[in-house]
Image 1: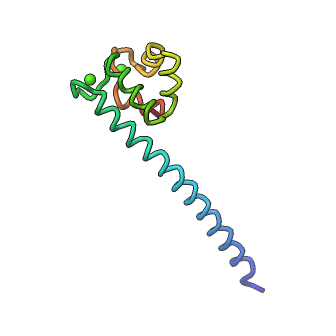
Image 2 (image 1 turned 90 degrees about the horizontal axis):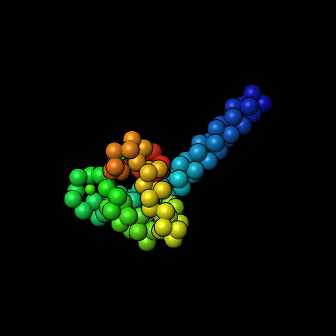
Image 3 (image 1 turned 135 degrees about the horizontal axis):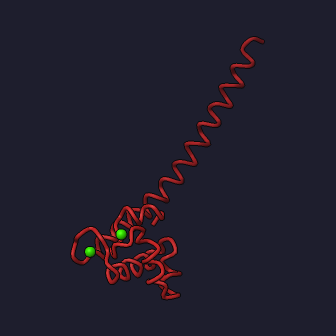
Amino acid sequence: MSNALPTRKTILCLASVLVVMLAQAHHASAADTDREKGAANFQLADANADNALNKSEFVTFIDLNAASNLGRAGMIQKNKRYETAFSRVDANGDGVVTPDELADLGL
Ligand SMILES: [Ca+2]
Ligand SMILES: [Ca+2]
């Protein structure tokens, strides 16, 4: 009688922990794979290896991401919206896109 409430509480607690864990695991694995692909594409596109993408490197980056089905790269490539995408991603307007600026957009 007296342990009915704690047991129910324990089950509810375990259930919610499980749900959170499953949600995180799913989210993390999808995001990690995309992030790894994105990071690899960034390195490939960064021709002069200064850890920033100028406009022409950015075009390469979008094309690589489109080939990997990442984010909206396919749409950008299809609609030739490189210029718009670049100015949107280049938050500080210094003419190059850094990993931080991409991360802010979840790219
Ligand atoms: Ca570069
Ligand atoms: Ca910038």
